[in-house]
Image 1 (spheres, rainbow, N blue to C red):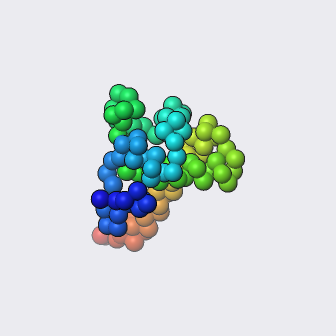
Image 2 (image 1 turned 60 degrees about the horizontal axis):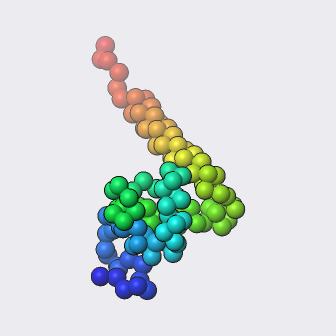
Image 3 (image 1 turned 60 degrees about the vertical axis):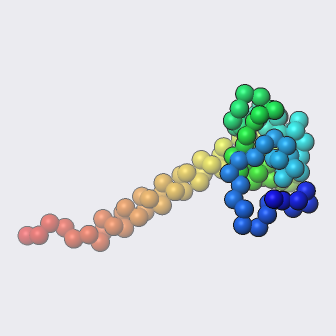
Length: 114
C-alpha cells in the first residue's frame, strides 16, 4: 500500500480511485475535481461525490489539466476544449496511419493473374 508521500507504489496498476485518492494523487482539492466533473473533463462512476470512482487514467488527466492551466493560463472551459481537440487530433492521426498502411499493402499485393 502506498504511503501518503508516495504517489503510486512501483509496479502497482491503478484501475480506479476515489475522490479522496484522486485529490491526494493529483495534488488538488475536492472542490476543484468537482469543477472538472461539472465541466465534463472527468466522468466518475457513482451518484454523488461520496461514492464516486474515477478511472485510473483520471490521475493523468488531473495532471494535464493543472499543467494546461499553469502553462497557458486557461480556464476549465478552455481546458475542456483543448482536451477534446487533442483527442480528435490523435484519432485522426490513427485513422490516417491506417489509411497509409492499407495503401502500402494494396500497392504491393499482386494483381489478378493473366
